Image 1: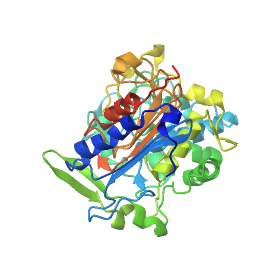
Image 2: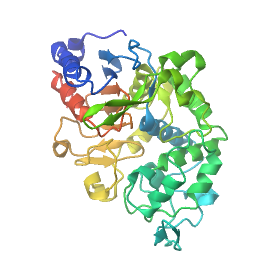
Image 3: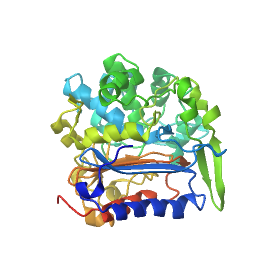
Image 4: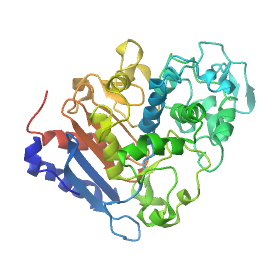
Length: 410
């Protein structure tokens, strides 16, 4: 990978190299993580790259073009796709979701029952809007939340494991039979909202989600290695995936050479189904930091991106005041939520270096990215350890990257 001299972009090269030593000492040498890649860029120019560990549990060397399960880092891609349709006035953020998904007509909030009993009649309330899907204020949930009768119904229906099990229409039909956790617009809960948004992209565009992504996002961004399915010729590039075990070595849960991802996806999960590379996702982040532009292509307009990266939580509150949800893709304090991204609203409250307006997200396998529009810094981190709450590596990486900055735009 061609790198720009750090000092030419306002970084201290030696301080950037401290990141590599930290990752090796803290994570690789201890066996906490088996594989990783990191890319830091400024003004769209790569300034620091690191890779370590192995691609496979059998010792296969790490490679620069490794493929990773990016899980919820799919969500920002789906959100950008939907906003392209908004820009064309094919749909509006304030429209009711039932306009595109009639199955959701009359879907109400939980009012009792569940488990071994049928659900009680739901409470009527305001209809779910597209903006509620994009902000995770829809009333939908995830089965892994493991708190209520509603998410128990998600687990029973295996809605969190839908890649090879269901079609888009079947997925929506199942969701329509389960009450919402709350009236849309009243609370924040990490959920399958972006999966539903992806189905809406399919129905509005008349294209499968992966095909829409390819034509309208991946091709202009030259993201040739990103998709819901893996070309068999690229199978040898897929990294192994692991799960954390307290006090024991991480457990291998999906071997790249024999991965279930080699089967064609029946459901294109807009909330978590993409496989990608570090270089591809860096191009996506470069487009974001360039206010929607990349190599002459305008993916979304600058004003659309401004709208997406504003805090849409009611009254300008942060996630500590709106969420009781189980997730680890954002720090709650000083962090709001936009249309597909967490957004830093008060850097001091986050207790880590940040810029106001910085936006980011991550994935269940501990992958992460952030975009700082003030300093024009982007970072993409790839690894494959589930769950992402295991280690504080996202906080640590941000601290190390900002500590290497010598020239600030703030």
